[in-house]
Length: 292
Image 1 (cartoon, rainbow, N blue to C red):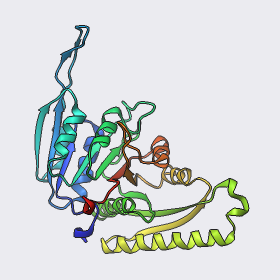
Image 2 (image 1 turned 45 degrees about the horizontal axis):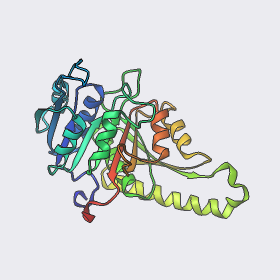
Image 3 (image 1 turned 60 degrees about the vertical axis):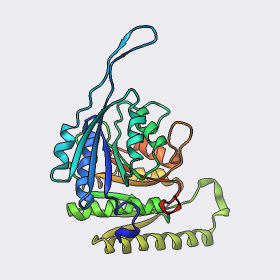
Image 4 (image 1 turned 120 degrees about the vertical axis):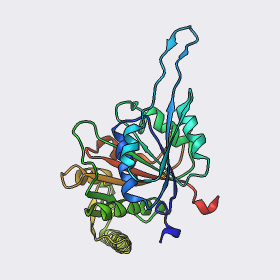
C-alpha cells in the first residue's frame, strides 16, 4: 500500500515556518498521519536592508518553537537560515531529495488576486514535489486535531492523495470521514442533460465513492459516502463544509504553475474563498513521480 501511495509513503518531509497557528496545525496533522518520518523544520529569517532610496527596511525573525513542540516525539531537526527571498530559499531546500512538503498559509497576508498568500503562492510556483497546504479560517479557534473530515472524491491521482490524508488522519483521531462525489448538472444545459445522461453520471459517481469506501477499508477506516447532483459542485461542497458537521475539508489538486503563482483551477479557488473551516489542499505536481 505504501509503495504505491501518492503521499503516505513519504519519509523526508519539509515543514517551512515563520511560526503561527497555520504551521502549528500543519505540524499536528503531520504528526498524526505519517509513520516515522524524517522532518526538517525550516525557519528562514529575512535580514534588515536598505531600499534604493536609503531607507532602512526591517527584517523578520522566524519562530519555529511552537512547531517544534507540536511535532513532539516525531524525529525532526530545525534548520535556520537567512535569505532576502524566503520563497526561493524554501524552494532550494525542497529540491534536496524531499518526498513531501507541508506548509501553513495565513489568510492575513493574502492578496486579492492570490490563492493563499504572496509567500505561499510563490513557493508553490517554484517547488516540484507533492505539497500539503493547511489554511485555517479567520476567527474562532479550531480543534487541535480534526475528527470530522469531508473529502470530495473524483477519479484522479490528486483525489486519491487527499483520501490518503483524510483517512489516515481520522484513523489516528478515531474520528469519522465523509467522501462525497458531486455530479455537476449546469442549470443552462436543459434537455441536453437528460435522464440517461444523469443516470450514467450517477452510476459513475457511485463507482467512485465505492472505490473510495473500499480504499478507506484498506486503510482501516469506515468511510461514509454520498453522491449528490448539483448545478454548482463547489457551492455544494461549501454548503456541506460550512453546515456544522465537519471540522476539516481536504481537497486534492494538481499544481499547474503559471508565471509566479500556482493554478489549481477555479473550483479550488472558490472553495478556499468561502470555506469557514480549516482546509487542507493536497497538491501534486502535474506529472507523476514515475515520469521523472
